[in-house]
Image (cartoon, rainbow, N blue to C red; front, side, top):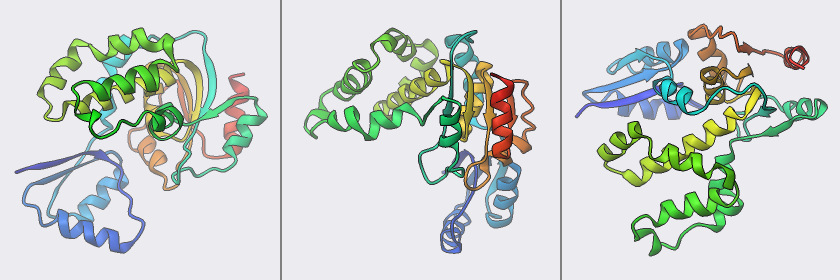
Length: 256
């Protein structure tokens, strides 16, 4: 049957990985690859010539109306650096710049829930994972609820949005779909609490644009961010692409 790869940026670390992907992708009779920037689209057309390639923006825009309805724009809020803590980070000086401006520097909160501290402690023994609702209860009430009790009312409202209920009912793996939906809440809430963000995460930038949060957008390790910004001419009045440390500093000073 047909396979659709939703909007992605394409980057391979080596020729061996690319050759393996070409062998699999080009052998499929009905594979469609959605690419979210011009460079990735051109790359897909060159290397995956037996597939259908389509240039399309990121899927988060499909949720724009829901996001704007649920998370209202703030007049007052936090200013922070929301930057990658993984190998895609391209600027080792970001933490220092944040420190110089006395600003918080963090990555997605959900990574803490999933991989460290409370998230690790709350991993269920295999037998309990088979109990209906047990995984959801642990993740929502223990991992997140106790640490951020003030967010619980909104978490439950988000969980039971009518628009999501229809999607959840149609999915074959409801547990995984619900998990992803609540991870989205964590991310959206984290961005919505701000009035100004500097970030090298594409989805922080996109979410900030949707919510009207001023944001300075900087490169990741393989220029995915700059390519997306250039492709879609993201000249949002609340957003600027910052190519150098000096531009980051000037951006912060101009919004002080």
